[in-house]
Amino acid sequence: MRLTTKGRFAVTAMIDLGMRHQRGPVTLAGISDRQRISLSYLEQLFGRLRRQGIVDSVRGPGGGYTLARPMNQISVADIIRAVDEPIDATQCGGLGNCHDDRECMTHDLWMSLNARIYDYLDSVHLADLVQQQLDKPADASTGHKHETRRVVGSAELKVAL
Amino acid sequence: MRLTTKGRFAVTAMIDLGMRHQRGPVTLAGISDRQRISLSYLEQLFGRLRRQGIVDSVRGPGGGYTLARPMNQISVADIIRAVDEPIDATQCGGLGNCHDDRECMTHDLWMSLNARIYDYLDSVHLADLVQQQLDKPADASTGHKHETRRVVGSAELKVAL
DNA sequence: GAATAGTTGACCAAAATAATCAGGATTAGT
DNA sequence: ACTAATCCTGATTATTTTGGTCAACTATTC
Image (cartoon, rainbow over all chains, first blue to last red; front, side, top):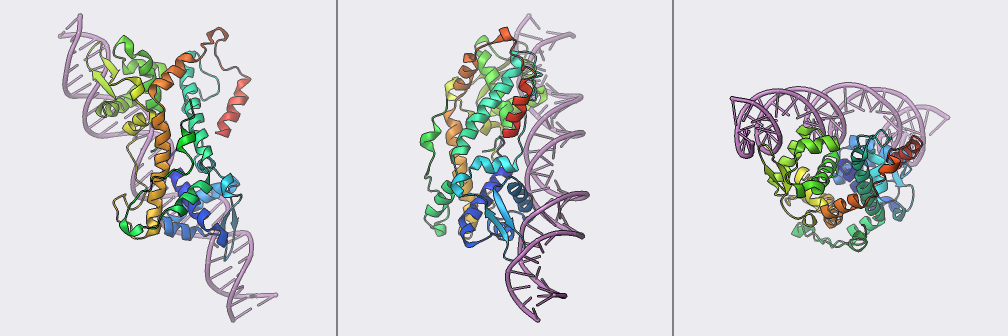
């Protein structure tokens, strides 16, 4: 699991899509405008999201992207997995050419940390983030009030280990 | 919060350090050897860890790095924060020059997702990871080598991740 | 039915940024 | 002085992000 701006842009874009998909296909141009993400980049990201079966596309006028399944069945991890291909930093390549315990430690550590983070990000669904966004009081005029309100999360967060 | 190989290398190295620091300063050359991370890179990472007050350094022969505070007071998030300088992908720069709700949405989303991930990674401490590593059954009898038939499994795992 | 325009789809290449490594300088113990 | 170690700065490599071109598809308009 890698968590970079790429994955975040994808999540942001998906939330934008999640908030509007009821009104029909959403264009990337619109998302680009609203979220200030370059259109080229969005095209690339949504190409992957489409091939991973997370969104569906409709070409032509009135077209755009729609969610391929309900928002509560799309986790943040799904989105990140789709756009950020997995890295392997275990040296042994996860392929068994470790020669002693030490070298395998890296492997184990990564897998363990990966599992933890995946568990968490798999528990947060697009529906949660969209809801959180909609719940937010629209006090844009006052600037940045971060209503740090955790919809689902902190509680089940601490379970690991 | 960004989660890349950089942060992971740092965590791996810190666990190595955590497992040995009782016996005095640990050299980066040793960590480099055991964890197969380039010495140059470790130097850079530990330079930051030191400046963030997470480790202390002792120069000269017999020197190396030690933990600046108890392992249960060093979270994974601390380590990652130290080496991976924070990114800002909010367009408005987090500085309040957003002009309408939409532009702020990105900001809020990021902050929210950040908060969730930080909450989680702040709840996992170095002590936990070191303990987990020590608890692992040292099945050196079986060689702890990844057998060839595990290759398929590992490959699948990689794909899944 | 044909033309038009709005949209995705698939590339490729360039620019910007980040990750990684290499070499030399500095410090301190023997 | 010699050596083991951290420190520092620049070079190299990889990844991210953007920009461009052209083809395919389809709703609307003529």
